[in-house]
Image (cartoon, rainbow, N blue to C red):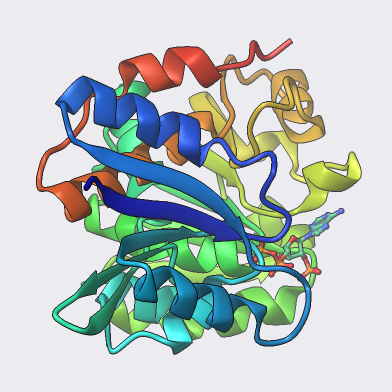
Length: 279
Ligand code: ATR
């Protein structure tokens, strides 16, 4: 019998994970089945679905909104990235235990460094937003050797508090938190990442044009939405290198697949299948 994996979220119908993992399994010759599970909106739905899946022999789960915090809470073991992110996006069921990981940040770093060809070592990185998406990205970006990281948020207090919490875990990489309104005093950045949920409301965080250094990469974590308001703002600011989060999605999936199966899939076909032009 093939090993069973799944993605769990709510809603889940539009998840690309079954397609991505199906392509990975085919390309690596791994005999697995991968399904999508709707954990529902009712309290306890995630925990019940998880228990049912394990009881049926499930080996691992990808976890998406709104269950990433609950996924960390049920784990017996958690990686440092998952603990610092306060959330898990991949679970593995092994020897009767639940192991939690968070591959979102490493997926982002691999997309920027490998797919987009921009090594982060020595770069100045600006993260917009102070929610879960930023929380998961900071440590992997620091590990990649960024020169400096700034978290800028509409609500300045949240950025300052998050920076204070994460700074001791970054191996000395400088981290500052500030309000979007204070960005004018922070200089320019080589990579500007939109980790806010503003795109989902058709808005862009208010980033001054001076935040984009010459040749900067503007990266929106959302995917499949074409040129988002943030990417349009970046282009108007003179930024020519634009990317959405499709590569982050594919690369975090590849990390989970590698952790589960011990073989790293080539991500190019999945990327080509899912990429929507930024127009
Ligand atoms: P996630 O877990 O996806 O990061 P979240 O925790 O709800 O989501 O955080 C959403 C982030 O997007 C917050 O940083 C929010 O800013 P506030 O803390 O000031 O609310 C940010 N955000 C949402 N809409 C925004 C907008 N229109 N402009 C700027 N920032 C926005």
